[in-house]
Amino acid sequence: MPAPSAHRCSAGDNLRAALALLEALQRLGLRRLVLCPGSRSAPLAVAAGLLETSGLALIPAVDERSAAFLALGLGRADGVPAAVVTTSGSAVANLLPAVVEADHGAVPLLLLTADRPARLKGCGANQTVNQEAFLAPCCRWIGAGDPRGLAAMPAEGLSALAERAWGAALAAPVGPVHLNLPFEEPLHASAEQIEAEWARRTSSSPALAVNAQPAARPLNPVDSAADLLDPDQPGAVVVGPWRAPAAQLEPFAEALVRWQRRSGWPVLADGLSGLRGWPGLQLVHGYDLLLGEGHALPAAPQLLRLGSMPASRRLQQWIAASDGPQLLITEGDPRNLDASGTARQQLACGLAAWLAAGMPDGQPSEASQVWAAALMAADQQLQQQLDQRWLSADPQALSREPALARALSRLLPAGEPLMLASSSPVRDWESFAAADAPQRPVFGFRGASGIDGTLSMAAGLAMSHGRTTLLSGDLALLHDANGWLWREAMAAAKARLTVVLVDNAGGGIFEQLPIRTGPQLDFERLFAMPQQLDHTALAAGYGIPARAVVSLDQLADGLSWAAQHPMALLHVRTDRQADAALRRQCRRTMASIHKGPDGGNTLS
Image (cartoon, rainbow, N blue to C red):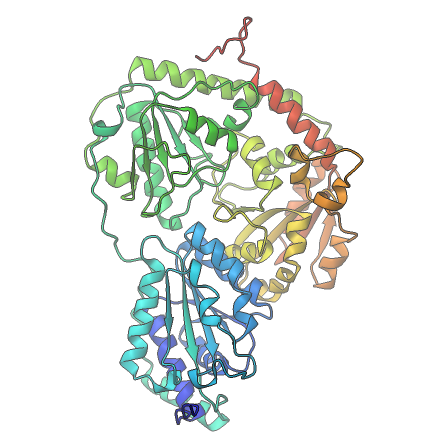
């Protein structure tokens, strides 16, 4: 069978089609585009360059994996999708790690990948792969241009493609969308053709009707508060990592404060919830330590669960062991998030809508106040023990990762966005961040919990917020060393990223798991995998200034110094075996502080 003939088009036609698509996305709300190099994607690159004059922020990138994570950070920060443009072939495969996280973490993301036309697929043409299928399992929708080439599509078809892609990225649950865009040759517009398009654009100067926020979502049917939970009886609220757009956090928190004032229930909020330090909210901060080997917290008579499952395995076990009624409410995410299988019902309407459906008037009952007071007292005693006994080391010494997390939580300014790398940093923040620390946005990989793209996602958060601090382990930072290449983009955006590196010579998280074996197996080689690498020298190779912090009393000065640079590294060396022993000893002691003389639980 003869191969299909090529669609006749010019390089100018390709450029006009790319412009029409990007302009349609820009009218819908696209503000930021991360551009990776390539030849097949040249029409998209030139189009993006021309659209900079109309407000499209163009961020060049040499590494597709890092580019996708930068866009992930941008979208995570404010809930507006950023676009990533790549060429064809294996470039598309490098987007997958970020797409996985966007899927599970409910982050809007738009992938625009150039491709060969259908006539060149499946016949051995260079750089031609089944890239249209690479991202399929994790995308909300996959769209494609005309198989003959994007230039074969009419303007209304390109607009419709953009509208469906943008809508799919922001529909519940928000997430990644992939547009695979074939381009027939010739690809590269001449200077005359580019000048003609420039003249056309500057003469028409179309106004952009920007609609950057998600459209209002239909609410699920809701039940009144009294139908599933009884606010006049003791209970607790468990809040998982925040996954909805940042603008929705404040009304969510205000609704939670209203529920707590009515019910008196204490709140156990994940470190990535953004609720710790929220004014007017009573939180049990140290639940992960109180739920250690001694299980100092009694089972909750009833539970209001908000959002996805918290990271703490001990809290997950506590949820599963609570046999009273449980209601799970998400902020617009209809997917099953009941990992414990114990929720009687899941609603996607959001907390505020559920309360508006009929929260009964009243005040907390005496029984609820007594039960909540016992939990709050346990947490207060735990916090005092941490400050006075376990983490009260000489400020001249900095060898304890839990002490670093606690000090950092107090030293960072109120409202300073923070990203926590997976493994030990996010767990230490969960357990050891101070209860009196101020409120701030906190981010991490609690969708798929990987370490891919840690530095790049933090850079995206910083570009969106203007500033961010990243707390990372050495292997997570090494996994995305090319993230240091965002230095120039950070400077151009007048943004700042401070990286606090916990260097414990390998995978410290494995020291906290019961897998250290005897002499027959090499734990260091099989699990910890320490790398012979100087992170300070590596950062210097990317032009990043670095400073060693060897004691707690140097940390505040180091943070002030780092804030003067677009990107800076604070290098802290720790002892992972000693810190793992400290965590175990602390957990055993904290969980038993409420044991009575007969071994019974004083909170029961």
